[in-house]
Image (tube, rainbow, N blue to C red; front, top):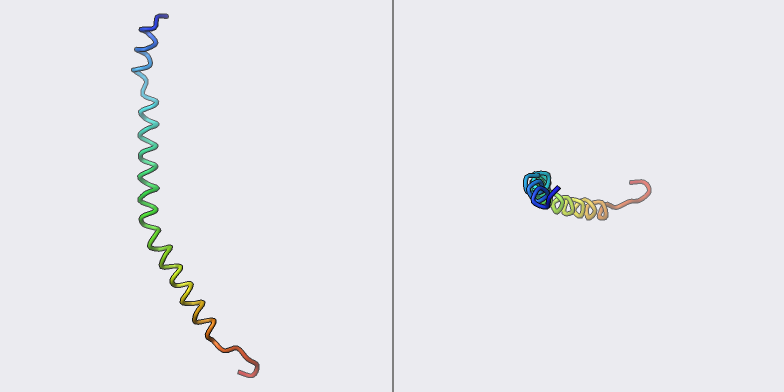
Length: 64
């Protein structure tokens, strides 16, 4: 087999192009997921701090 045949076969393969498409698609999905989940994560932290402050201020004692 000649080198010309190998070069032609290499140029006709599309496996690498499909892999690149999947990598780009996966990166886009992960990026969108992070954009959506970041505000939720920060609001959860604020809610946790609010609950902690409330519970910390509740008096605990015998007979109440």
